Image (tube, rainbow, N blue to C red; front, side):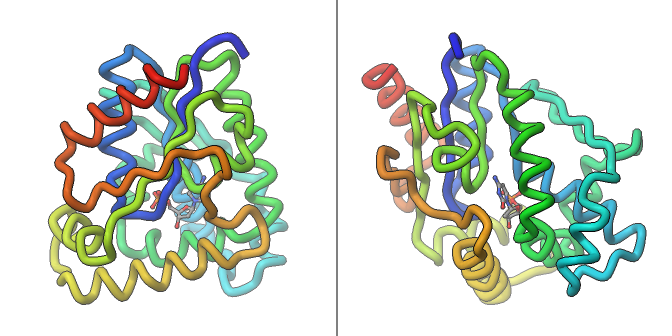
Amino acid sequence: MTGLVVAMDGPSGSGKSSASRGVARALGLRYLDTGAMYRAITWWMLQRGVDLSDPEAIAARALDPVLTIGTDPDAPSVAVDGADALAPIRTSEVTAAVSAVSAVAEVRRRLVAEQREIIGAGDIVVEGRDIGTVVVPDAPVKIYLTASADARALRRTAELEGTTVQAQKAAMARRDTLDSTRRADPLTMAADAVELDTTALNLEEVVAEILRLIKEKA
Ligand code: DC
């Protein structure tokens, strides 16, 4: 690997996506949203009526959907079997189902391989849950973003329509538990990652702090 790889991990609502795009833009790097890949597979399975309470049924179809994802931080794109998936992967139906799909080892094996292929020689900011621990364990810069449960729920509520902070807090707690207790590549902080608590920071401050860390490390 010759180019820079910035691994950005952390739970939902920690500000990962906005910060990752901001850093990629500031440094002229590519950007990969690995969560969008898990969401796209989930959307495809929901459409085909795969029983998502059955890990074996998920595993049996893990290789079938054909995924295409862009890496331009200013023009996100994701398609499955040629169908545009950008909007559908953000629905509450997909959000509620994605933890079950992303817990299946066959799905992870497939997507981790595709992610490594896209990362290639680097020059990219990669966001997810297992980037610094599994996908690119030798990434020169690893950031683990956190924020208080209230701050995370508030941010998510502002992004979505027809929900409340209380409902978001409960839904996020459920997803955090599933994501961090699953057997395959659970959400954990890499031993050599820098933890950044974004509770009291705005986006510009978070991006500035990450740029400072990159300068220091890379
Ligand atoms: O970041 P997000 O909310 O779009 O991610 C959706 C789900 O995908 C999340 O609940 C956990 C899973 N995920 C994962 O298991 N590994 C990743 N690298 C990225 C996301």
